[in-house]
Image (cartoon, rainbow, N blue to C red; front, side):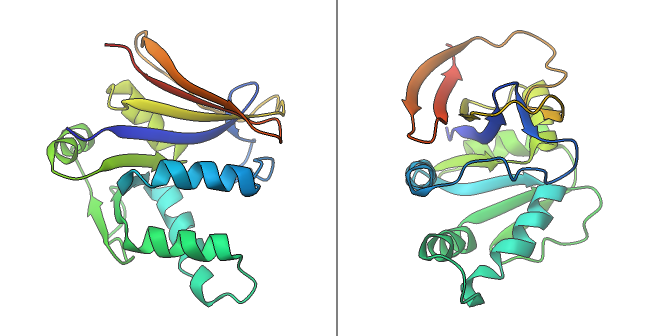
Length: 190
């Protein structure tokens, strides 16, 4: 069975973005964290997103290959994301409109269980916090990869919201980066 991971940056006080959508300019991205993300993504062949994050990612990453100012890392990531299977969950989109993407409109939990049972490598949710909230309510996330950034936002969109029951986790990895970010990897406790 394939594993579904959540990869998310959070503030020390548990927010994944500030008060407004895409208020994420506080997230630290440096060479060390890029390498850490690349290591994580190297085990993945499918990315899952909700509509809002999917549209934002599609708008940005499809422009990177032709952008002369894009970094080599961003160009490599754009190539990876282009070849990787992308699944967007939305009731309002008519089509995904991005290479190697599929649209799922209903029965989210059932469809994710089907994806987990398919052959392939691991799957990951990158960002997409509101979508992640729904996945957590259905206990569909197998591994939480949380990068705690050294900032307190005070308010914003929380990582965990409306979780209906306790979820026992075990810490399987922690890593402290020079920037002060702490990468934590938790798996469901069996």
